[in-house]
Image 1 (cartoon, each protein chain N blue to C red):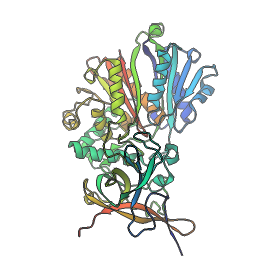
Image 2: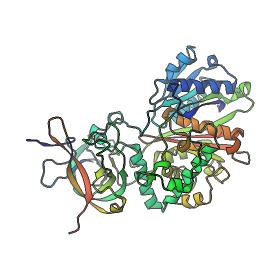
Image 3: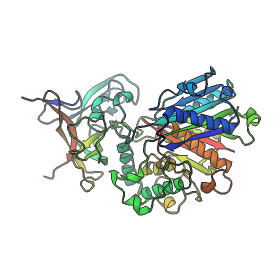
Image 4: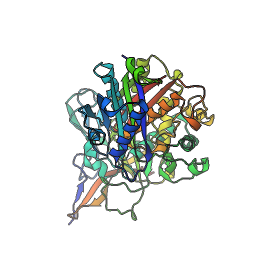
Length: 380
Length: 143
């Protein structure tokens, strides 16, 4: 049984001071339903999640009490990936024909402040100032640069590309392109990562209508296909966030195993991907994820970035809508925003940011605490 | 008379003239963990024992925390008095990389591979006037 995506909806990321997070989720669902030409009462099931904006199943208060199965998903920053995987499985099993996946959030300003007890860690870890995702990404990037000869130039180029793409994306939060020098001279936040190399917690919503592919033609003249959805957690030795210690031998990150599983299930390889979304919590992480997802060798990123390979007209366009860097990260919605953008690109509706030559295969990768990754492969 | 209390029991030997970081080692597979834990994340065994991980190590990665973290960070500082602090992973002879605050807080004073020394340092004062002590690493001083 194949799985189709027949509707996509976004509530613009950034700040929506007059709307709750849940209202932004409802807005995304309405947009996705309109895109699919369906009504809420047609939905047989829903999966959804949010970190700070309430229980997803309370969305029925906004959208209608239709009695559908509605399951809340919470998996850190990979919540969107896990929600989509659950919906994928619900269709694959044959139990349902059509349903919705939704993510939304509304975070306070400033860095996330996770509670150690939520992650099975004692309070001292947070009290003494080590429970920060920004630190982890900096520590991982610092070591990666040391091991693989990546320089600050590459970190800057990732941000430069992100904000350029954001400036071409009407729904992006950050629409101002930034120059190489503006990024290079921005304040150092957590060495080696500077202000314009980090994404910010934000607000927004994203939703997808998922359908049994055999019935997709009933609803849509241009369905896309979700070839696979894979979610994997960390191994012993993976260097992941919120880790008071690590094993001496570094094992593959959860991203590596999720990516390999997805390619294997889809029966294709990295060379077949025309456009991709890789989690870019910060510019260092996008660089690392290029290799962890199999799109290049470790260390090769420096050359690829200098050549512009990851730009919209490059050989491996990454985060065409500006990614997390230009859109911010409403945790519950972020992974689904990635899928939304890939669908826009595969439909050829990217406007000024459209990848040329009719892209046919897209890839999304989301990463979340405390070390889990979700990968989706989407085709025309 | 104020006391010096560890921020959490079992992280390091305290009080001690020559404090050691404490962790656990799996009786079955010999992998070490910090902080000590009753079960092994590598092999799943429930047989682990408390071991000393040492008081010197090698810096594996580092960063500098430049802004004052929000709660659950709990120090005596205000945004005005906050001082940036280093954070890094230190490879311990006990066979595990431990995340720690670092005393050096300038990039020019930190380098991957540099030898580091454990310090038990005052972190804050609690409501009873007791000093809360935590672990930190600094550069090994040249002899």
